[in-house]
Length: 370
Image (cartoon, one colour):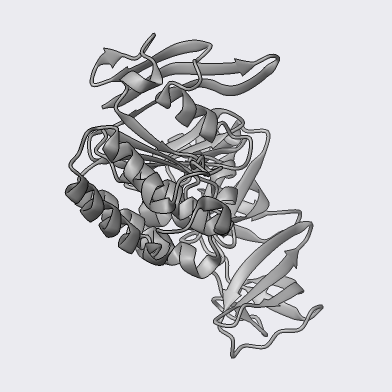
């Protein structure tokens, strides 16, 4: 439905978006995800027609959007900075896109009330934007975007100013609204939880470059590179420097500067080993939910480490352990108590390890055993 082919945007000497290509299919909820300065909002504004690409092409339903002004594209956009009419009530702000399309007043009233109820702003309809909090204004702006029929909805951080509790609630409401409208959505966020909760597919950007284009599950379990692995997850993936060695004639990894050797998984093949052997930097990645800790060494807990940091999060403890020069994070239950400086043993096995060579993912373990 929407296609970007080699789209690049330059602001002076700054390359905001670099050779970006991806497709958004009809009725798909696509989340553009990445840190500040990744080019997310710039990409959305180019699709909307507000900003023109320096190079590259954009297509809608196989038709080029070159030279098509924003008002001729039937796209509806919600901006992060609200963009509401301050002299109008919130009811009038929501009704504005419908009145522009000559919809009957009775239908306008019905749709405005319905949208206000979905966004939990029905008691604010008689007020003007100047008398609202930032989160309330953001919900009005989101409602004004979603209330009209459009081919595509472009949402730029539409719930970022809400408090944590309401943001979680609004994710569900937003997903339900878009499912009910049977529409296509491009949604920008820097919050990985939001991306995972909403997306059919995630476009991960960093410094204007495409890092990964995949389902939320693949972005989490099969990150394309170490950037994605470190940016997705709470906590993010931990990395340990490694060296490829041979044990009993089979590939294995020596961790850090230690003599500890972990055999590679049985499906780590010769082609993967060849990719790894030619790399300048080799790291193995570990999700915090996978390993466990023990106060003594045993068959399962095979790596001696020291407790570096203990963070209680109520429903869980987040333990950081130090292994040589490397730090790794482990999630434990709140009933387990650990002290900083304590000697513990960490379980690291091939079924846990992701392998990265020069930043690129070479191998991921089977998600069925995670």
